[in-house]
Every structure is written in C-alpha cells, then in structure tokens.
Image (cartoon, rainbow, N blue to C red; front, side, top):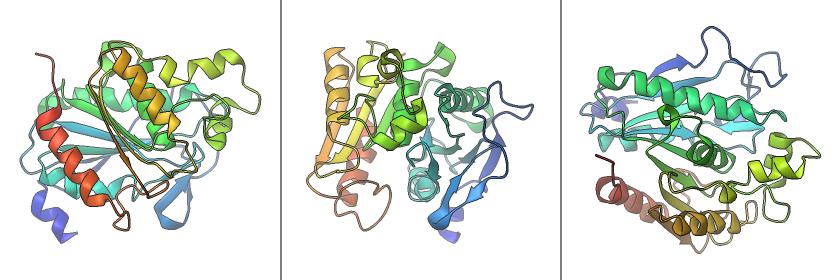
Length: 279
C-alpha cells in the first residue's frame, strides 16, 4: 500500500453506478460471491473504483476485468494495475459490472453508466472529458469493444480502447463458448449473434485501439483480435496490435507472463505518444 500512496493523491473511492436502482435486470438475486484469487461473482451492486494520481495528465482509463461473463478477475485484470497507471499520471477506474445471465444489454448499460459518471466528474478530478478510454480483458475485452462499437450516444463513446486477449466474435468456432452462452443464452438467434459479433459492428467512428494477445491462446482464439484489427483497419481507425508468441490466456498484470515488460512498455509509449485526440 505504501507504494500506492507515494504516487497517489488520495485513497481509491468506490462509486455506485445505480444508487437509485438499475434500469434493467439480469434476473440474479442474492449477495455478491467472493471467490478465490480476488474473483467475484453474482455482482448485484455494480460500482467503479477510482484511483486518482497525484498529478493527473488528463487521461482516464476504465478497466473491465474478464471472467467469461460469469465472474470477474478483479485483481490481476483490475486493481493490480492502478499504481502503474497512476505513476504515468493516468486516472484509473475499475468497473465491477453485473453479469448478463443471458440479458446481453446489462453489462453494456453498466459500462455506459460508468463512462457517464467519469465524464460528469471530469472537472473535479482534473481530467479531460475527451480523453477517456475503455480497457478490458477476455470477456471484459468484449464488453470494452461493445462500448467502442455499440455506444448509444456521444456521451458514452470512449475516446480509445485497449483490449487484452479479447473475446470479440459470437460466431461458433471463433467465439469463447462460455462467454457466448452467458451473454446470449443457450440458443441465440442469428440476429443476436450478429449484434454482438463486434468485428461486424465497427464503424469509422469506432475509437482508436491498442490490442494485445498471445499466439498460443487456446481459450480465446487469436482470430477474435485479428478479425477486429482488420475491421478497424478497413474503416481507417488507428489500431496497434501486439501478438506475443507464448503466454496463453488470462495473464493480465501478472509478473509470470514472459512478455510483461514488452507489453507495459508498448502500452505506456502508445498512451504517451500514439494516441490522437480530436481537437
């Protein structure tokens, strides 16, 4: 904790997304389940935890942890990155979102609300309302890319997207089976499949992207990222992709990932020099 305090202006603050109740439901009830390794399931009260740096540079990143749309890996795909981002002057928020349980609109509504809250606090937090990005890992990467392609208004459009080994497609043979079932149910229609196959939802207004993954990922096939890269590229959206030869799936901020130094340096450089913001 001492490391964190040395680079942060204050302790993290947890903000509820829907203090007066969410506008929709996933049908799940009961208490949140705290699982091993910092994972949580059955989120009923979604929140963002905001980590503010001592000297904000204007950029904010909202992180969506992964977990197959069944649970959330809140530590290595969430809170563990806070200090690293804060040292760069980046305001960092971790989204604890509700599971879809077959209600595909629920996680996306939580992500949109989180972006709204961040933009509403822009002046207070010393951040720029047009430098707010979405980041996600695995199924959280699908949620991040969903916000980047399916946002409902300019107010909730992110200014950039960062994806760790993301689920992108809902097409059988490419998708991650568990994420697909949890998001769309056991027997989704072709229309549902198409709606959440995000490589098919990219437009010229999709935000600039940074994508990273391992070539030997057996959980989420690399074709998810590759298809998304090609779709962004076709729409002339700036995109950077880094494919590491080994590492499998789910490494997040873990030190045992062989290429951690590479991805952190590449992302830090992209955030410092590669982002192009609208005037």
